[in-house]
Amino acid sequence: MSMKMLFIPSLSQWITMLALFVGILGATYLETRPKIEIQVPNRDLPAYYQIKPGDLSSKTYAKKDIPSKILKKSQQLVDRYTLTSIPKQKLLTEKLLSSKIDQNRLVDTVAVGIPATPAMILGGNLQAGDSVEMTLVPTTTKAESLPSPIVFPNILVLDVKSVSQASALSTSVVVVALPLKRQQEFASKSPGVTFLLTRKL
Image 1 (spheres, one colour):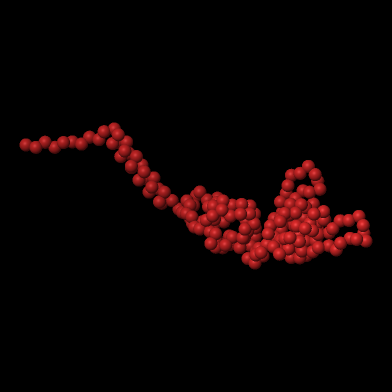
Image 2: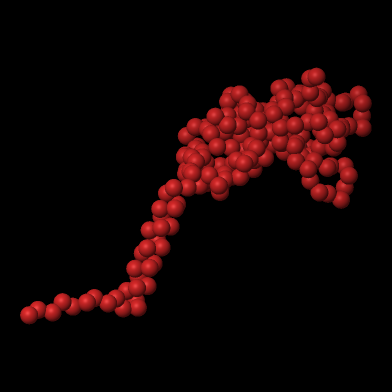
């Protein structure tokens, strides 16, 4: 006559089985949660960089974990430029990007910051994406030898940043997309000049 052995799990085996059961339940719950695919940068992006389709990759998130103001689709991102450095896989919002611009506007340009007074930024109405004419007016004490102003037409305003300074003479910095072919001219002529920014109405 044979006897059957009754298996009684030890405490550690009970704990292992319980953990396995909880893990299966958790995985099942995660699989059933609503998910959404969002376009995020697939590499670190520098400031004032125009986003291209190849800069984005799709990443899946639980829908409930995504804030409502996040830009989700590539159509919302491509041809806009970054207003600050953006790390890889960061969720993007309107505050981090410019409005859409012609993809040729940033070709062969360099970002240049110039100090600005309230008058230069048109009383606070100058915005990223505006096109302006930038004039460099030389200063001299001898009117008869006053050099001609230097004009940079159709310059794209990349950003208008407020700065905290003790001096009231410079309260903002205007970042513009300067044509690369005129960078050396700008560097040699800008010291000591007065900047004027004008925009067509």
